[in-house]
Length: 123
Image 1 (cartoon, rainbow, N blue to C red):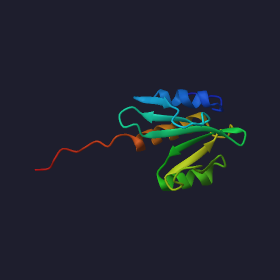
Image 2: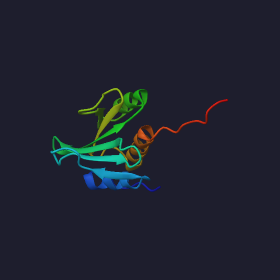
Image 3: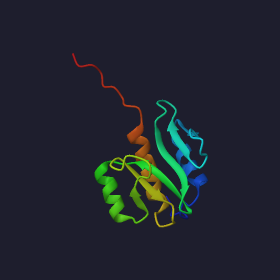
């Protein structure tokens, strides 16, 4: 993967999210500032995109310890706005996070919110 230009727009994040299998774009609130990306199979959200303080923000689910590590490593990562701050982070698209890192965070959020697979019944 080549190093791309920083992701700065809602449209770029939506495109990254829609590249995942079964992802769809939704606008569930009266406030069209919020774009929600969901799984088709369980309708759970894995990304919420919105404008705040002059920037685009993206809320993503993250393992609690990893989310805390990201908040310490990147000034553009903060506890999630309007979400459970233990399990969700906000990434502020200020150009400081590499595209590859954001892509990995989106994929991880997608994985964490995916439908649970059932294991076969044990005899």
